[in-house]
Amino acid sequence: MAPTSFRPEYISFDCYGTLINWVLDPTTRRILDGRIPEERMKAFLRDFRNYRYDQVCGEYYAYEQVLQDAFDRTCRKWNLELTPDAGAQFGATVLGWGAHEDVPGPLKTMGENYKLVIISNADTRFLDVNVPRLGADFHAVYTAEQAGYYKPRYQAFEYMLDQLDATPEQFLHVSSHMRYDVMPADDLGFTNKVLLDRGFDPHSPAYNYTTVRSLEELNGYLGL
Image 1 (cartoon, rainbow, N blue to C red):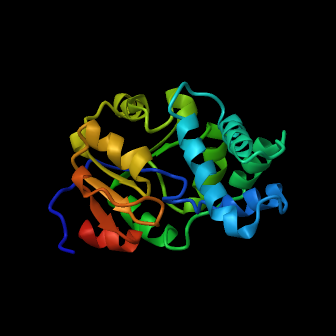
Image 2: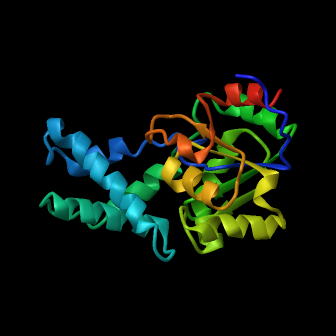
Image 3: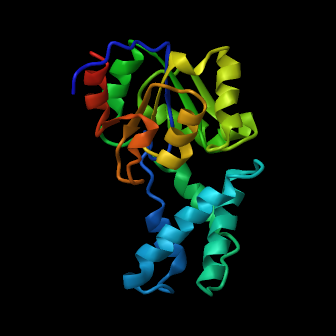
């Protein structure tokens, strides 16, 4: 991949899944405790993921409750008994997560050359714990709780722009999620977008993004 000549004022990142290793499936399996046959587990996890997306497309409310409500909806679809403390269990799991192995070194290098920003779909208390594990300095960290909206709502991105008094053209936005980040960012005029491909979503080339498979590759793209 040839290096880009674009030098952004800010490099903005999604956090969970992109920088922090998203490992919710083991907790989901533990909570289900054998109630779903292994051959059907992939379908259950897909439904749970889809309901999590749907839950954040409305008004903001606490992320732990988002996880609870999405899990409840999935269990109802599958005719399973509800687990009243599932959201709390998922929240405790998130607090234990750390960076993807490929993140800290390259991210530190990037932060020595650019202003790094996080725009995250979680409450502030989660970012306060997880972001220090990334091993880099951030110019700003914005949460759904602060913005009052989750991505893919445009208002989440607009909050970041307002706080920085910036325009979309000043950013390189990086995410591993098409639906939460790349698509709405494109709608809002973020012309420079990178999909850090971790296998979450199918590709949608019409949204005009560059694909990389590691932050080291992204640093090469930036000429670092």
